[in-house]
Length: 516
Image (cartoon, rainbow, N blue to C red; front, side):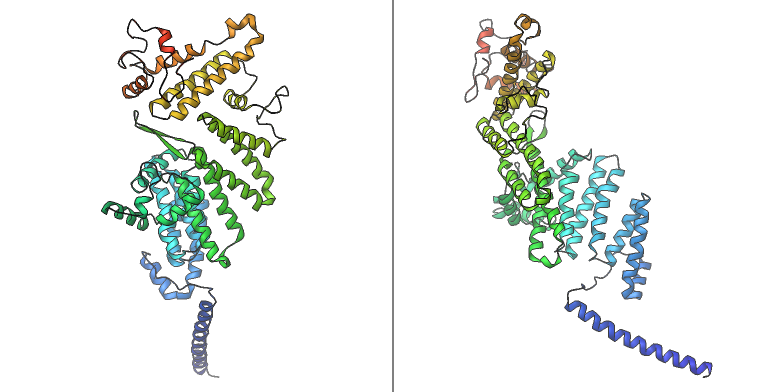
């Protein structure tokens, strides 16, 4: 065959094969769509012109391009070139918007790798927000039923914001609380205005919550009823929200879910509940304009149920989970006792001893201790650490510390902890002095000052106008304890007719006797 004729034959065969391949590809694409093996491609958005032109020209080779970019992004990641890797990952999400791993990788890269490259906390928070928004606003738009994206969102709230591994975690919590307060109110539980908006501001809040933060108030209330009560100004509530929403999607589409992913999401929910129990309440100090996190004691029954469920469902790790369950119960006992909820503390204390009868309640319980350690002894021993410790200075410091916290709680209106901290201080004093009974000859040398004297010492320091609490707090304490005198003067500068005995015998309405 002549060369020219051969060329014509080859071109004709190429045309036939090209036409045939197009027909076969069309049939294959129809079959893939019918079987749910693919999702229609989305048009590229904000891609560089060269990349957009290349992908449009190559069509079906977009997968090859994304694979190449993915390998390149991985190399950059290994070389700590996170910003460049983030740019490539952004292109991959445009090329393959249904490639879940790219969304997860890019969100994690922003929230964890890039954020810590910045020293200033506001800059870090901006990148953590970018990671959350990428998954929530873009990833879920293309993959609304993908459990992995819900898992990653829940993890960001529970671990990056809720835990304390990042030294900027306090800033994250504060920033998020400021974002959520307009919607959930000053206590983080305002669902009435969201579910039944009556004012223009209420309707605006619902619109912003649903469109900007992608939170459904009705589902949030459902989560709160099942897992709460939660403070929705804190990240743990939102970790549980996204985890619970992911589990709901998994139930709706079981064929798309890997069982181990379901277990992981449930664990994130349980871990978030534990964190919410430990620091799920915002305690504001109106005098210093600061706030600290305290335990959410209302969650104790729900957290206990969660542990029980975990041990039933995950039999392979039940022994390991039981260790966390026992530690949680002992913490719950102590926190309840600290809040002067002694009857509840006793109930859970009895429960943990019945549940784990072969385990000592104290980590370093000496052999001389009775097997059934009383509740008071357990709580006091937790404060003092080593139950054999008889240091006069350390014990005095512990007592004065709890007394100071007691009066500070009184100043901010926390009556439970006012009484609870004083109870702990008194029990520590009694425990120490009980140990000193066998050293009768040395009581004057190693014994503690009378409890009423320690109280007066602490109160004098707190009520000192120069170095004590702010004036407003001092005024509240003066009022609540019915103390004579002037908050502007040092405590003890009273009328000439007031004696120390008078001060020691004063009591507060609906509060324990001030000094006995």
